[in-house]
Structures are given as C-alpha cells and as structure tokens.
Length: 144
Image (cartoon, rainbow, N blue to C red; front, side, top):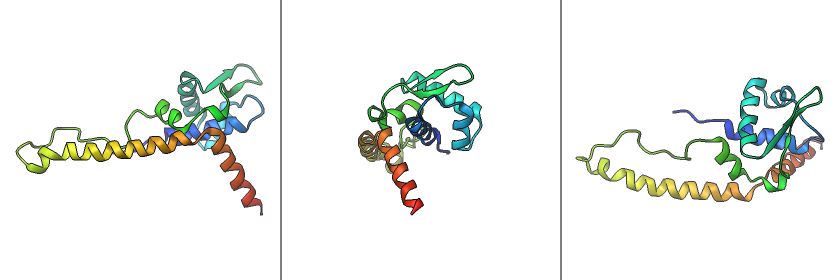
C-alpha cells in the first residue's frame, strides 16, 4: 500500500510557474522539485490536459500557467492528478459470515466519505496563488 506524491509535485510545479515571469523549462522545474525532467514532462502533460498549464517550444520555451493562479484550487489539482480516493475500501469482499466482515464496509464507507468531504472542502479553499503567498511568506521569515 503506497501513497502517491503526484499531488505534491503538481502543486510544486504550479506554484513555481505562478512565480515565474515566463516559460519555465522542464529541466528547471525538475531541479526545483528534485527529480528528473522526464517525470516532470509526464506530470506537466496531465496539467495541460486539465487546463492548468500551456507550453511553448523552442530555446526559450517551457511551461507556464494557462489560467490565473487565483483561479486554480488545490481540489482541482488533486482531482486532475490523483486516481484514488483518500481512503479506499477492501480490495476483496470481507467474510459475510462474520459480523465485522459483514458490516465493516458500510461503517468504513461512512467515515471515508466524511474524511473525503473534509479534505475536499479544505483543498477547495486554497489556490495556487495562496500557496505562492505562503511560500513567499516562509522565505521572508527565513531571511530574518
């Protein structure tokens, strides 16, 4: 059971693009994220499909935001790059002859739905512009 870092990397990419004055090459993005450019290009592809990013070709090309950073919520980003819910239920059916096995899926689904709704509400309140402001504020505090 592993978790994905696609959401964190996508938010990193979008926040980096939000502070850039022009197109940012995948090699520069990869350097900021600390990964290889091929991984960045794949994730940028998903962000293009979602309508968050556009790219230009050539020696001065790269990625840039397709929409204002104030108009991109973290919920939209999460839904565009992650394929699973916050909590997934059993992969195989529990034993219906056992009271816990018979009832656990419904009980857990109720908790999972509440947790997912809480996460969605929190992510919907935060934009890429807000993330950039938080990053800039943290950088200013570090300088002091």
